Structures are given as structure tokens and as C-alpha cells.
Amino acid sequence: MKQLVAFELRKILIVRVWVAMAACLAIAAVYFTDHYPSGMNSILAVEKKKPELVAAHIGPVQADLAGKYAFRLKEEYAETSIGTDEEKLYRILEQKYASAAYRADLFNKSLTQLSQKKMQLEPQKAEAPYLYNDAAKKLSMMEKVDPPGFYVTRDWEQLFLFISGSPGPGPLFIGFVIALALAPLYSGEAGYRMDALILSSRHGRRRIVAAKLTAGWLFTAGWVTVFYGICALLSCLPFRFIGWNAPLNSHYLFDETPYALNQLQGFLLQYLIALTAASAFFLLTALISAAFKSSMSSLGLALTMVVIPLISFPGLLGKMMLLFPAKVMWSRSLIDQYMSYNLFNTPVLYLPMALIVMAVLAAIVMPLIPKAFERRLKV
Image (tube, rainbow, N blue to C red; front, side, top):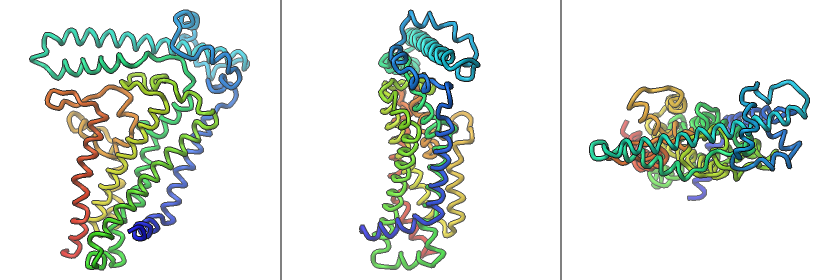
């Protein structure tokens, strides 16, 4: 079986797939290096120049410093302002601190509003149980999250924007490479009349079909891991992974997250989400490949699934499309804010709901793949 899987992996890793992966990683390298500090234009540059000064401000917002620096919010954007490096250094630090204080104030106000909303819904608990349960669950989760503080997390912010943002290039790159590599997984055999030979051989119906699935998943897992790993190194390694243990809501991307995680935990969670969604996407691609004899048709449909998340759908359809594998690969949207589904008057968060749907989808699609491929002998 190992030899069969290795053989199928070699068939997947053809030149065009290597070129596509290299191109995606090259674009990632250009993106991250382009966002490295150039002069005194980033809090990362401030931290490098005055680490002791920045370290003295790190942590939860202090009321006296927040009041002292509040005037900076009314000034121009500090990173692009005119002045000497020394002037910009203090300007950037103070404006970033004032911004953190402002976001902490908004966070505390939203908690107060949530508490009031829960109290208002309490008399209607019997008539509208979901609304009350949802408000109570959101309040309970948000109370476990600390208000935003001041931390140096610019490197992580750029990483999340690229690999899991919506819209962002990372999920598109992952989906594009999977579609390009795995759309011909089964349909490619038709071009050489190998499909009939495989299915009529003693081990074809089970071992070879299973080997293709195993090889396809190994490729998918490897590509997602390599992509996330290299992006993390490009974004954070030059800055010593500074801020890895800062709360996830330390920057604006996760202001409303209900998850009490740090940056590294948030990255690992998004990686696991992307890996799960990419695996489900691979299974759908494999099903399409098994059902069609034309590799071009399989590739066209697989690429269509990749770009579906770029289309906005209204109402219930839009909420259902949020559970589509290619959409779930935009993993930041699953944890950057509180969002729930009504399941028998019980609020189920977007993250667990998406993972449940991916598991159910895999359980349904996997048995259909060999059946779809076996139809080749009957057509």
C-alpha cells in the first residue's frame, strides 16, 4: 500500500504543480518583505530602536497613560507623518497606545450593552428562547476575554491578513493549488484509458482507489502545512516572533473575538480550521474528478468552488454558504467575532458548526468517490 501511495504522490507532484506552489510562496515572500519596516514607519521599528521604552508600555491599558496620549487620536496617521525619526518614534508609540485604549473602552461599552440586552430579553425567555440563550452565551464568552491592551503584534496582524483574511490571497492560493493538483486525480486516468484497467484489476477497486485518496489527502495536508509554516516564518521570524503570547484581540482584526487565545494559539487554531476545510474541499474535488472523464471539466468545476467565497449571497443562502469548505478556509472569519446558528433554540457557534459540517460532508462524500469512479465501466 505504501508503494501505491508513493506512486500516486509522484503522479500528483508534476511540474505544473511545483511551479504553482513556488509561485504562491514567491508572492507570499514579496508581500511580507514589502511590509517589513522601512525607516521609522512601524511599531516594529519603534520596538527595535527603543525596546525598553516599548516594554514599559506593554500590557493592559493604564488609565493615566491613556489620558496622557488621547490627543494623538486626533492627529494624522503617525506612521506616515513627517518629522525626525525620534519625533516619529514617540508619535507612533503614543498613537498606538491611545488606539488600544480607545478599543478597550469600546470593548467595555459593548459588554455593558450585552448585559443590558440579556436583562431585557429575560422576560421573553419562554417566548424567544434562542434570542435569550444567544445573548447569554455571548455575554458569558465575552466576559472571559480581557479588554484589548497595548502589545506589539504587527507581524501577526500581517500574517493573519494574508493567510486567512476575507478576502485575502492565502485561502485562494491553497484552493487553487489543490484544484490544480487533484482535479485530475481520477479523471486524468481516462486520457490514458487507465480507468477501465484500474477498475477491472484485482486490486483496483479498493487498493488503488484508496491509495489515490490517501495520496491526495497527504498532498493537501502537506501543502496547507507548508504554506502556513512558510508564511509564519516570513512574517514573524525577522521580528523574533514578538507578541506571540499577546491576547488575540490586541489588534483590530480580532476586536470582537469571543475566544480568549493568544496570537500563537490563534494561528494554530486557524491552521487546523484551514486543514479541516481543505481536506473537505479535496474530497469534493476528488468526487468531481471521479465523476468526470475530462480533466479540464474537473479542473473548471474545482476552480469554480475556489472562487465561490468571493460571491456574496443574501439571507439564508448566504449563511449556508458560510459552511462551504472553500469559505471555511477563510479561517479568520470563524473566530474574529461572535456568530451563531440556531439549532433547536440552542446557539451553536460558527466554528463548531463549520467543523461539524466538514465532518458530515466527509462522511457523505468518501463512500461516493469509489462509486462514482466505478460508473466508468458502465458508461
